[in-house]
Length: 190
Image (cartoon, rainbow, N blue to C red; front, side, top):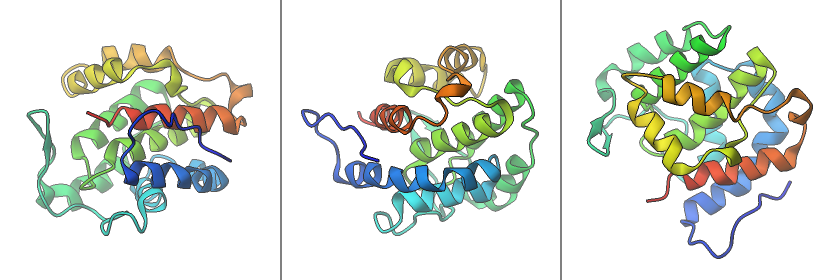
């Protein structure tokens, strides 16, 4: 499956190479859906899309990180909190949203958290609710605003995600999957 990329945009080489690997994720998608919501699933997604690009692909970070003035979970606690997040319930949308928000606060990798976690969220939603997010329907500004507020209030994120859920009949469409991920990757550009 070819990932549509707007060649007029400047895309960092890591993102370009990583997006080329998303077809491997699509091929392995049933396995990811089968383990959706677990730390191991997220770790494998990160390793698959960033393996060989980052020396730390699929590995828990050992340094503290922050973004936009928000400091993510302290690295010394990640080994303790990742299994707790992994075990959080995910049987309905409010549970899934809480789990996704907590994993975002943990931010377990040095780089590539958002890109890997959006795939992880899609796998959880497909497993539990027979849907995924059509990322083409969400702008970078909307998503980043909702994610910044999510540690305090998830209403904005909830509304945004619910409005972009795919119909069950579109789940097998690899073109929608690839196009959505290309948009999702653009959220990370500054």
